[in-house]
Length: 115
Image (cartoon, rainbow, N blue to C red):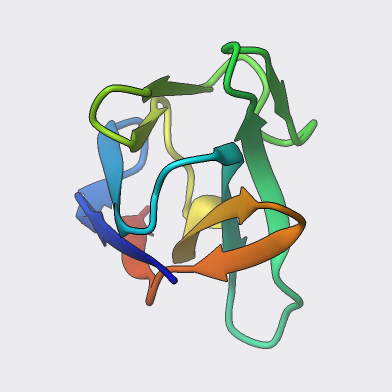
């Protein structure tokens, strides 16, 4: 089992920044891709960004140029730096980790962007 704990969410004004962190514990060896998803009220959960063990990332078009995903493999931690936030970024952000084709989820952290 892999446990994921997110932190760093909160309330910010439009144009502001937040940095999310997600720490993996438990049987966290052999974790491959890690990523962030988000779910806004009344909408489906969507991919925000993913990053491989080697550091290769991909992003949703809506966040390209504003968000940056990174990871520290030694700490089994993935980060999401979010800049120039807009109210449309308001959602619960979930961390995801893949291990041997099984996906694990954190409980989520709320990000609210006020206009």
